[in-house]
Length: 182
Image 1 (tube, rainbow, N blue to C red):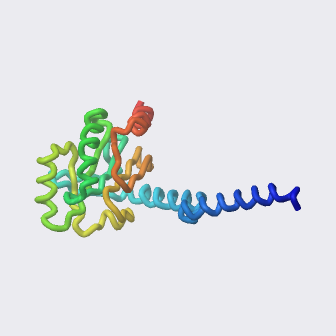
Image 2: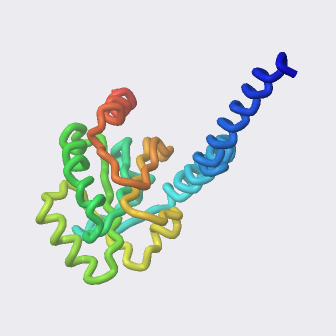
Image 3: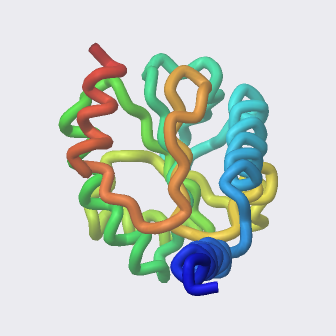
């Protein structure tokens, strides 16, 4: 029995580690996470060519006919502080890649949405146009359940999705865009 005790203890420790990791990671195998990720991206891409929005500045955008190779749909609301914190890096990104990136803000305010959008555009000097999604039609089509959320497309294909505050000037992200846009 003494010969097998270290092997038994090592096996028990290894089993404990595996079970702990499954509990910590939400009991979800990585393969199922990848499948959910693919489903979400597939939905985003299938809806891309159908998306047409009218902005608060009067532009009508049919996303499949836009010239810019990178399109960012940014879901936000005026009361959402993480959303507001993204505005600075979105403006910087547009300055860094003029004519290469189109940002469309999708506002989810429900009370006086147009007034709130205009107020935020002026207060933060937003360099992108927004559309009001008072009834959450766009959010529902794209299954967006929390804000801030951003879908970053490259020629209609999803490059990145974020459903939390994102720094659009993050070094790896900017480097990825530079490589794509060369």
